[in-house]
Length: 326
Ligand code: ES4
Ligand code: ZN
Picture (spheres, rainbow, N blue to C red):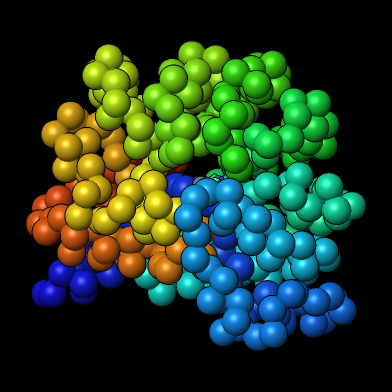
């Protein structure tokens, strides 16, 4: 079979996905219209032309603007359902997705609308599409720790529906140490922890995520390659890195996919996984990320299969469920 058919047919996971980043322009206009809200772009084409970013912050500004038309529970349901039907076509079997409650509660959208809309769609996806799922609540790191504490409080009644807390948004100047106390509290409440680290920020932020936030996974983590002691630790602990090739390309974390340090990471025995981050903004879902990196690095089918298996290894699935895919 062709490499593209091989990628399509492989059972895959998605471990680094912001649900707000799956908001396709067509659905954005549809939801804006039914909520009597406007987007400052004439049409889908004009909006898509704005998707050109020099760094993470330029992207985040547009991403938060897009998310601002989500106000009702059904909006969050429709967003999540559209994502699930899309990845179902790509043979994704298991998803662990982030949601950013503060993006919505700061606009006075009730926490439960966000939570229930997303969760109902995930349950329907499991029943109707056979996609298993975990939900990760991510704190916005550009906001203060008090706001994160408030968000954690709001999540406590939904504890059984949220597997972990995470940390995303503007990395530079907002180190993991800023959130040490709220992560400590989340751990005491029984949540796992993950964090974006080493995307734009330095390798020190990865150390902080490990030592202060006690993460079980590093989201991105590219910058670990600057630090040989850190590489050794990540390899020894088999700490998963959730890499996002097309995201890194679109946000100018790397210049060209040909420079993507994936093979170097694999040589260091790091547990690397391929993910799509914000597929509506970065030009592709799982297949497109696998295909992009395969073309650029001339990956073999064996290497591609190993990357897909790593996704199951790095997931929060039970050992028993993982075994079925390994
Ligand atoms: C994000 Cl690519 C990326 N990095 C950090 N925070 C984010 N939120 C959504 N996408
Ligand atoms: Zn991300």
